[in-house]
Image 1 (cartoon, rainbow, N blue to C red):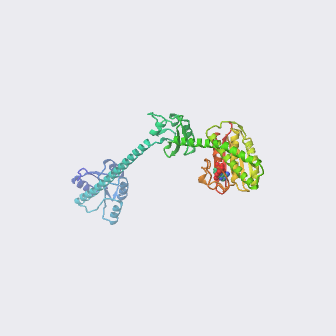
Image 2 (image 1 turned 90 degrees about the vertical axis):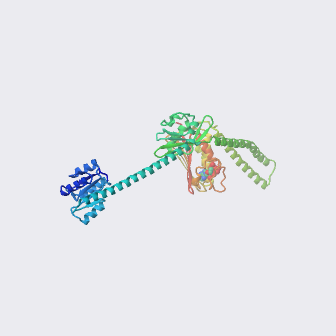
Image 3 (image 1 turned 30 degrees about the vertical axis):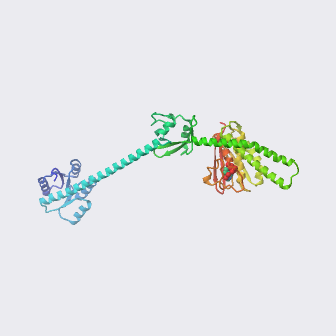
Amino acid sequence: MAKQDLILLALNPAPILDLMDRTLRAAGFEVARAYDKSGLDKSVQESIPALMIIGERFAEQEGLSVSKEMLERFPTLPIILYAERDVTGLAKSALKLGLSGYLYPPLRMDDIVEEVQKSLARGRKLGDWLRREVKRTTSSLAEKAEISETERNKLEAIIANIQDGVIVVDHHKNILFVNRAIREIFSLDGKELTGKSLADVIENADLKALLVRSNEGPLKYHEINFDDGRVFNAQYTPIPKIGAAVTMQDISYLKELDRLKSDFIHTVSHDLRSPLTSILGYTELIERTGPLNENQTEFLQRLQGSIQHITALVNDLLDLGRLEAGFDTRREIVHLESVLKYSLDMFDGQIKKKNIQLTKEIMQDLQSIRANPIRIRQMMDNLIGNAIKYTPVEGSISVSISMREHQIILKVDDTGPGIPPEEQSHVFEKFYRATNAPEGVEGSGLGLAIVKSIVESHQGRVWVESTLGKGSSFSVLLPTQE
Ligand code: ADP
């Protein structure tokens, strides 16, 4: 038995109080008395008793309700209720409340000591169990922490050593982490970077442009070019509660492949042009050599049609090559509405032939743009030409030009077959033709690639919105002269 265990007596003054006091002291306990509720609170808090004996009534209050309050604050404190009479209901309530013992007269000294020891032992067991549980939970938490620490180290090692560059920034675009690849890509050596502004420490115009574009949301494709010819594709991914991650993959070899392919196409197209011109020339000469029969005339016409088709394709390829190589530097003041007029005049015959209803909407006082008029015309012809080509007979097309802030917006809407949603992002790629392109509608899949190159070389943007079976709407945004 722990000799120094303190027993707190919360009983109204009566002979039983003195009896308990004496008995417990004799049994080797320390004893303290509380005379009112505030004294009781103070004693429980300050002297931390090992057990409390409370009277059925204490300081004008029900012993049970005082006990209930005590147990809410000190759930492990063993409490014995002393009842003036043995009443079953009271004993039951005491047990229900979670009191650890129950005493009632007639009381012998042994009864008191025995009940106190029993309650103390139970209390100790509960304490031991609690301590064990706390220990178990803490050690399992520590184990978990250890596992996540190992996992974290593993993850850090992977990110630090992968070939792709990784930069993590906070919401203010200050650096939280860069991996080894990033240090190599930007030749940062051992520079201290954490906490510094990304735009300040990494001097690269394309990376800065990425940070500006990042306000639009996640970015999948953004090229970062270096003076020594290296090209990286960068992705910008916002990370909730942290900021964002920029990852970079070296695509220099893919770019080189693309360049070789473009060079090849350019050379072949170039070499094909002269023989094609000469074939077309000779087919025209045949007609002059003498009268042809009906079959010969028809075959000759088909031959000429095919040669013109291949020539158009070759011209498109050459155009694309020139545009992609950045040779298009001619800039003049261009009024989009007059270019549109010429383009629509050219298509007038086709529009009438298909009985297409054309609507034109041009905003007043449009500003001009600085552009290459030939390319702008080509871009417009391709978009309007497609709208006419893909819109069925009796359909409708609407063309509008408007202005917003410092941008001119050209829109070409049609009531054609539309483009499947998953293919819409591909129609601007070279040679791509949508799977639902109507049979018999010819095309090379280069028109929109040329449109995209022209628009981008004028610092603009082009996109399509389309509903399958209803129609398509192509929009071009170009900066005004100012
Ligand atoms: P094409 O020479 O095949 O018309 P484009 O590059 O101009 O090539 O267009 C690519 C593809 O996009 C087309 O093959 C067609 O499937 C789709 N497309 C373009 N414009 C339209 C349109 N106005 N309506 C429906 N589909 C279109």
